[in-house]
Length: 105
Ligand code: FES
Image 1 (cartoon, helix red, strand yellow):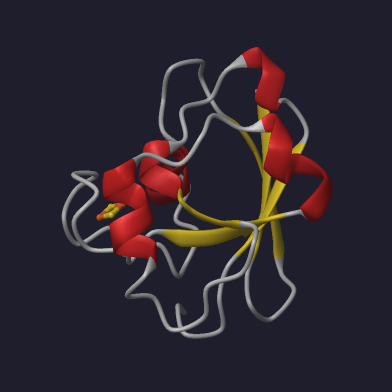
Image 2 (tube, rainbow, N blue to C red):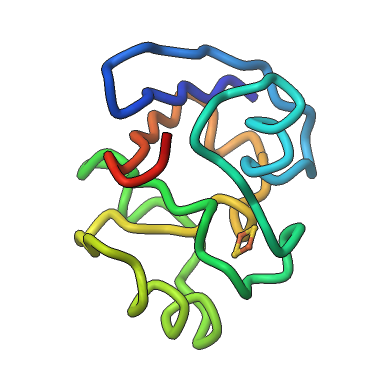
């Protein structure tokens, strides 16, 4: 499943993510800067925040109540805001592009 991470400075990382792995895990495994994932994927820190491109918003699984509550504490919440630990790679996500907030670097 090909996912592209774009750092706040524009640097792109195109990663082949195994099915079932979270985008947060993939970013960490591939040393994408800016995904600290302090809580280890428990939906409790919001340091794995990413913005998905507008045309992808409706194509992703819905935001859970937990994720929604955590997204309320991030510095900049946009319509495309998601926690990358809550997004698992699946074939329908192939080609997804996510951008990292400037506050994460
Ligand atoms: Fe902590 Fe995603 S890793 S909320």
